[in-house]
Length: 449
Image (cartoon, rainbow, N blue to C red):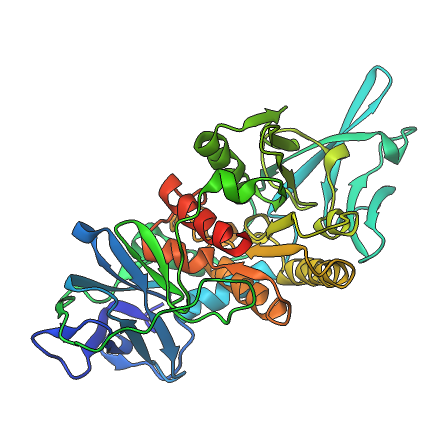
């Protein structure tokens, strides 16, 4: 462990340092990583760069370039004037990142699923999983179109169709060595590198006029960073967001929210913002929000397996996102918003890649038969740094974030970069606060109206 990257012994140097900096300029920081005074000769460390001004409620991510030799360039765009704090966190050293990568792709059993079979008055629980190593007879629940399957041990003398409910719990299993586990102790995760000389002063010294940006619309190229927060409001780099009256924008619209609980937060936000009638029978059941006067229909449904949680949910409502898209007719008043990621982090990456590809193909089919239908992809967001790192580390989430951006770049869909937005806000919660959700929904409204 003595050869792993150390934040304490690493050096951050601001290139071309100045007493004051100009708003709009780029500031570069060069990082030299080592441990015990030895210069590191390889890269792969997982870093998170952020600039912020808490008094101004402002923040933005920095762009990290890995030179694969132990040095990194962190570039900050100075979006606003005032006193700005610079931060570069060593989330995981390269040794930790490679250990997480290896461990993630080693097994499916970090989460135990329990299926409930009901046959008349009898009820039987059995083990279920994406992959089951069992000699017992199995029930296979197949998404035939994309050849994705989920399995349960079949109870004796009971039909596979009798599966009614599911829940899960974390299994006490680790694919990390005892030595590797020390890398993920709280004191070793998210360690600040720029403890000294991390505050700069930015002034408005450029008198040139800033050109008007076009309104945000689907299909625009994403940048790094994709925007910044100012007074708790998100401002994209490449386009402009206008104030949109939510009730007028949603009038006559049918909005499908498909995915995990981070997109379910949207329907809860709509309920409080426009006083819409929300019909629900439980957090993990289909939810419907309706405004009859304005003909607004908003629906949320969970994505297919894997769906993690101790709460018991009905499997009769389980539907793969691709199938939900395939049964959608679509028109100019139909909007589909898709978000998936968090529930896939504990499983080998190929599970997520296959799912993302199946959703991509379904969106492709939809846009061919109904080009006027609006499709929006909300990327996953950051979450708590220190909780259950092997299963849920943001390292896993970041890989999935890159996968989503790569797979959907060829389609005319709107992207809501929740990853970059939550870094800019400094929100490390799996369910971001309301002001973050408001910024996501403001992008959504600009896309559709």
